[in-house]
Image (cartoon, rainbow, N blue to C red; front, side, top):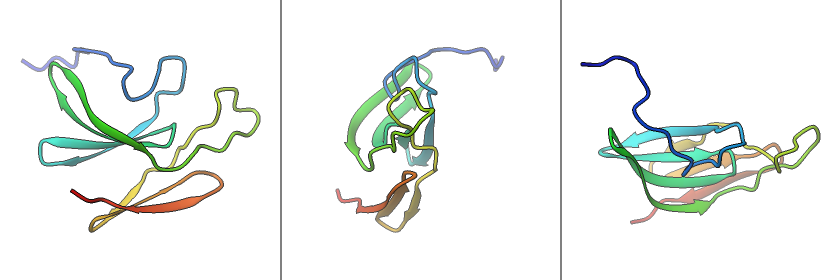
Length: 99
């Protein structure tokens, strides 16, 4: 029965003490997550928890006042074919996703 109750918590994507901002895009049984630190993380979400399958830094967050946590990326990435586009407040980058 679905109750809406929290079944698990995890700090794998973003450490506690930050905004815990991450954008998710599903692909089959996996999920791409772009976190506030500028990392693209491939993982699996299940009722048992999150499994990190790998990560890469896409774009460093801009560190500007009044941001005491070392920067944050708020924008959702965009996917087109095998490309991913991500931005911070100072830079736009693109990467090709390969197998």
